[in-house]
Image 1 (cartoon, rainbow, N blue to C red):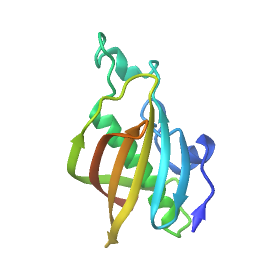
Image 2 (cartoon, helix red, strand yellow; image 1 turned 180 degrees about the horizontal axis):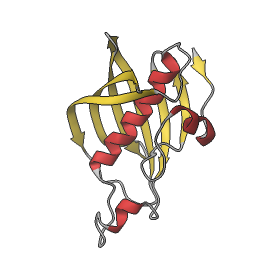
Image 3 (cartoon, rainbow, N blue to C red; image 1 turned 135 degrees about the vertical axis):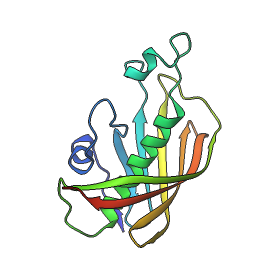
Image 4 (cartoon, rainbow, N blue to C red; image 1 turned 60 degrees about the vertical axis):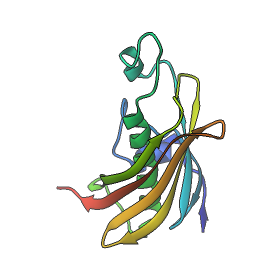
Length: 150
């Protein structure tokens, strides 16, 4: 089942992240229980560029993985079939096979894709990929779990 794309206002209602760590600007496509495609506009105004690296700004790989984890969390929320509240979060619990293949620089549009590989016992496993202009920047397998916080 295809769900309408999510703009930033709907993303803010689903994710607990806020500036400067919110790393998903728009959801382009989402198929409940299957896959999601989202967008991160990479701007020179990002705070991490002041130190990574001042002479040649490059988006840190760990932040690309965080953007993919946030994208996967949005898919988890859409696929859960439950009414979620502010006390529901998705925690990043594992990563396998991360490979960085291209630098991401200011001005790039990072396309974030996650597909559910399996979901068992409250653990979701995703195959994820981030790309710029069709060229893979990073790919990995991520594991996340949804929990209630108090």
